[in-house]
Amino acid sequence: MNEFLGKWKIIEMEQWDQDYVDLEEPGFIRFDKDYSGGFVFGTVNGTIDYRYSKDLPPKVELSWDGSSEYDPVSGRGWAVLEENNDLYGMLYIHDGDESWFKAKRM
Image (cartoon, rainbow, N blue to C red; front, side, top):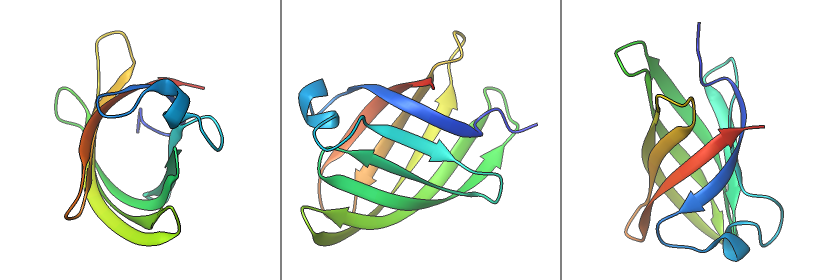
C-alpha cells in the first residue's frame, strides 16, 4: 500500500514563510495512484512524476515540471513519512532554490 497517496497541506518550508506558501492558494503536494501528482506553493506550481519505495521509512523520489511567476521551471525532490505520519521532504528547483518542507494529510 502506498502511504503517500492523497493531498498534503504544506505547513512549513525552510526558505519561505507560510504567507508566501499560501499566497495564491493553500500550499499542497499531491500524490496520485498513477505515480503522478502536483504541488503548489507561492507562485510555484508543478506536476510531478514519482517513484515509491517501501524501504523503512517509506520514501518517494520525484521529478517535476512547472512554472514560477510564469517562467518555466523544473526540478526534483523526495519525501519520507515521519513517525507522527507527517510528511517531510525536499524540493529542488533546477539551477535555483531548494527547501525542505513539512506537510500534513488533508
